Amino acid sequence: MKLTRAESFAELGLQSGAGEEEVRAAYKRLALQWHPDKQPAEAAQAATARFQRISAGYAVLSRPVG
Image (cartoon, rainbow, N blue to C red; front, side, top):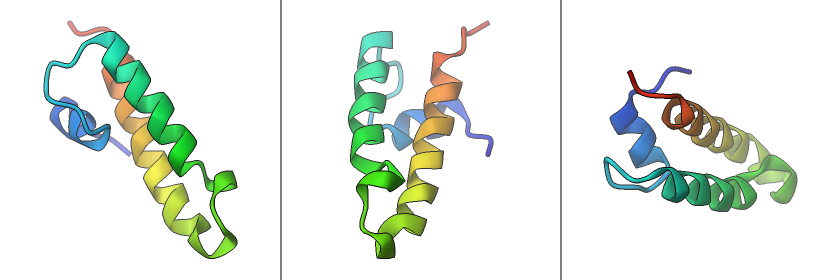
């Protein structure tokens, strides 16, 4: 899954241009909230999709720009 930087900020619930610490904190909070192992069985599929988008967004934003 390929997200743009703008989509990545939105996925993590951040405004464009958020700093490294904000990105890391948002990722940690959302990853703990949406991790499929933390969800009931009937919600695991939706949680997996959300978790993958959160992880993809973090991967984009944690890469050096330039």
